[in-house]
Length: 494
Image (tube, rainbow, N blue to C red; front, side):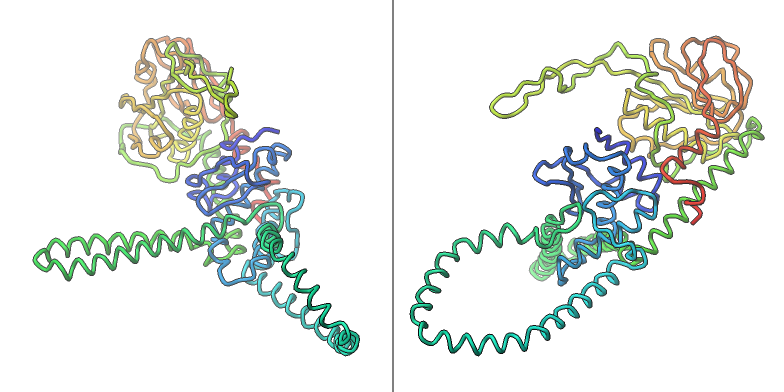
């Protein structure tokens, strides 16, 4: 099946809220040079042919596996360890925990069920002890036999020592040329285990060392500059303060990135289940309130930003619902692509891009949790259309052009007050093809008839605006939004 990276990211955000910032900021890129998937700590690489042969849940498992390598800094923690054993340890632990979360292990993955009871370091030490014990047993078993063989070989070889030395010398010369190449080809394969490659880990370690060295060089240069330019001491002091502040920021960033590694795999997965359950409980409370919400009044209105808006699986097939705009954008398209000099040449064509104006109900009856659900769906619309977003309560507060999801994260919202649907329908431009209102429906219908307005009503409240189309997002739909990637409610609570 085909791979929808955005869809997989949304599923991972719902299933693993603890890794939200990593999932959002980590780049995912195709790479035909690797057979399956892998990561260098900054980018997740995957072979599209490999993923196309997997089910949707298996694809989700693949990316969850790589995200865990990044979150727990497995590549950096491999220094000084037996590479093969460390790879087995990390893969076995996260695979066991992902299986416990309901994601199916792909063929070839390291499968040690008991690993769910260990952190990566604990599993590594266990495997290391077993390896050393096995080596000792092998050595003791072979010692007596080897002594007898050595004695016999010494007697048999005395008569032919010169000839044998000559042959060995020639064989050694013949094999030296092949030895390096064989080691080069086998080196990484001997340490790689499971379904993915860890061949990029060494590169990640080297890059981190380089970054640390560069930072150290900058600090040393600052010290030298301070000594040579005493007459500019005040300016230098400011530079040192800035450098110290930046160093503190970098330190905090490293600590933030390392928190999961310090916390351990088992505890992090445990905390993730608690966070996932908490979000579902918040949603359940929100759904329970919807039936008893009253329209807001004019008091307690404030303007504020919302944190952790996130993204979610689309509740509506926006690609089919949105009408095409008159305006066109120039984009490269695969249609009519031609192979030239071994490369595909894509033709620059004018592609129609829908235009959409969205008006959000931010009145007192709409809680922050519900507003976040509005905004997550706005982000989904952004993948299929040009978007402007505005807010209303008893007045309309103007449109903001949205170019990327982060623009929604940076918006502030006039929260509270009453609800006036007349100001909402009057806010739309006359020629815009797609007009959408997100609301809980808690107010009187507008007096003015406006055609082609799509009303997205969260909850079961029935409304009948003239000229508009109503789509109710039911409580069941919202609950499925959070449950669709979880086996059942009991799985959340465990």
